[in-house]
Length: 87
Ligand SMILES: [Zn+2]
Image 1: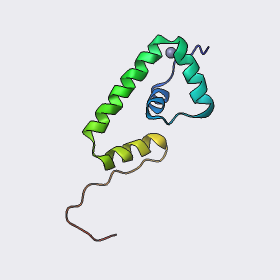
Image 2: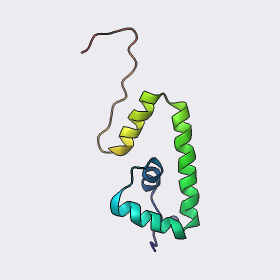
Image 3: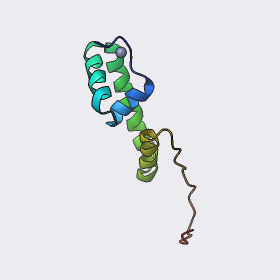
């Protein structure tokens, strides 16, 4: 079993279903033996559920995209009212 607890990022990615491969495997293994991390996963789940409720679908998918690619900052564009022009 893993002696190390998951980072917040790992927890969030796990709750969002973004964790894969070896990191997913080792984290799931750790979860089996770690009550603390199980609890934190539940908390992360609740936090994400709240985000889902608070944000519109578009905002939520942007937020998700940012989680998926933490390096590249996805700019959230302010709403332009009524303007249909492209650039
Ligand atoms: Zn743990």
